[in-house]
Length: 274
View (cartoon, helix red, strand yellow):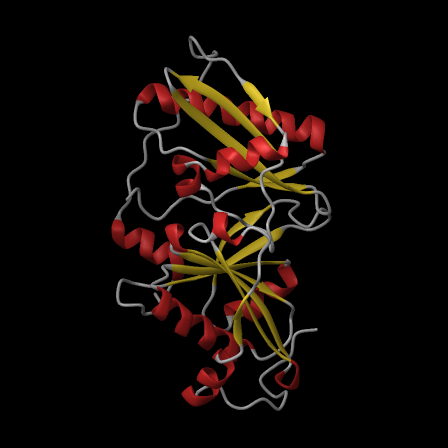
């Protein structure tokens, strides 16, 4: 179970304590560090004497960090660590996925509920708890909702496709070497956002072409929980590319459901199209 503020740990207001813990932050060895060196970085922060155990997955292109928390240690201490990393790594957001009963503990240290992923844990929903930062690296009071409200974003009205776009031909790819080749390509490598610890490539990629340009969408499947993280692996430049990718994504979801027993899907968008 998660510990509380009276578990005997050194007070987290002491900056020296946080900096001391950060000395135990280690870059995790990965099977394919070369390919993923720009897509993501994975760190561990583990101190048995302080009962702290974290895995941290940083996606520089997306300016965010996923927290895999093993429910050990003070939440205030962990939050201070995340704030330090957000400042040093110029992150816009840190987030974790937890069950509902754990979400309140994160809320007490400044995290906000950003979304709920139905069935993420197969028998329980996943609560996406996040902490966002402004351009100066300071936490934003009110979380992502406050940040989005201040920016007054505008979105186009949904325009679902009623029929298959003309000229679209789909190719389903699940051969590991070919998947690896696609993910390593310049376009896909920029957009790809590894989610799981270690190296988990998409289990399935749907491919199509417009002229000589290839378009891809992929699904990274977690068999244990029956969910998949989906990626759109190209930044669409034209309305035609948007229509192709929309249709491809729909077919990817159908294939994940019918052939891979996936009951829940989710995805992340990039902070900016840089």
